[in-house]
Image (cartoon, rainbow, N blue to C red; front, side, top):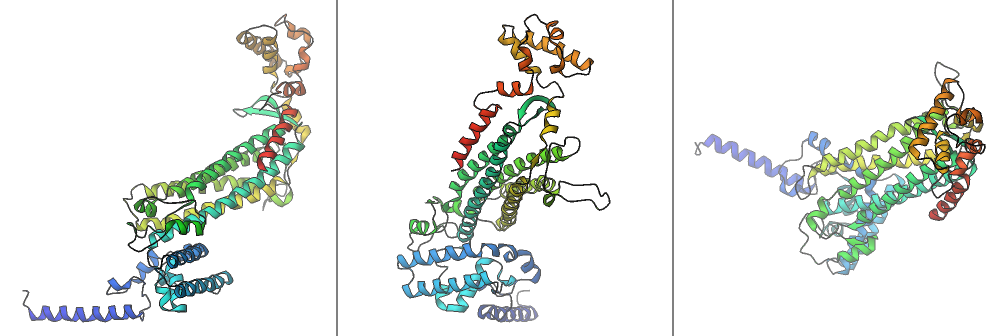
Length: 488
């Protein structure tokens, strides 16, 4: 069968066709010619090109890619791998391409797959042979890992700055409302009186932890994978520490296999970002409740609300609702990255092309949400009388009566029972605990005296919590002062 002449003819014809295709790919005459085309005899199928391209979204890494390439060329020249002339040509060409990209004049080609190949191809067209030498001692594997780290490092710095701006707005509100009383809730039931300044300072602390997490995450982002090449390192003479200094990385990644395949830093960022959005979502939920007529605790400027297409009386808190909704995106992006990585063997796999869109979306959503939240809170106004009226309902000073009896010498459990009986009387008579007379209160314990009325007032209750972390107005102002020092 192997000697069948017709079979030989068919084989020969196929080989001729493949040789011709290979020649066209090699000289770039085929529209789908790739920088890696030497191994292949046929161009990529159009469906494959569409399915595998990433330049439609990873082009936003362009400036980071150029920055990394300039550092790489500088390092190669310092070790003698590149000539000074080639280095200068490469840097000049990359800087010109950078300006074209910034001006929107750069032509992105889907057939070249990604941001890296587009820039390298354009560089070679511009400066010739020197452009082909840029990729010496590196792979797209360590190149893209470097680009993402550069992108995330910059993004983290911007997000931290946005958090700080939001914290400053919160501190201004807290200072203005340090004495404003409203009910604090547990189980969404009135629990104890607190000050609004104290409440929003809880928001500040949530964001402070978010900032700490990002600072810590940045340390692990700021490690250089460049020089790891495809997975095993490179036989060329390189100086990774010099590259790290040029790009502002604290250290180099220690293991080449891990360096090109690690996305822990991206997952860690996604987790920190998801938690930031969970915090913003909780704040949004409170704003949505407080704005509703059922609470009517606060109002937001008209610029930060929308109306209804059918109900003319509506003023809807769409911004808090959208922020609350967008938290789902960040949580989803975290799950995407975790799932993306869980089944991958070492080292790099093409799966990791899918890491960029969730990272980009998390960064964009975080920046927008933090920015709009800070601007929106700047318009917040408290309806102090409504807050106070609500604090007078629900027997919010009941714990103060129990604590009063404890200070008189009664065991807490007994004091709890006495107070519960007093609350039951207030409920049955449709009054607040503070409205019961001294004689009515003394019917439950002879330890109760005239000074009890001081602790049953809203002001007396909040003033009694006069310790670090407490809701007393003086403590709130001290917390604000400490917070401002922290931000400085």
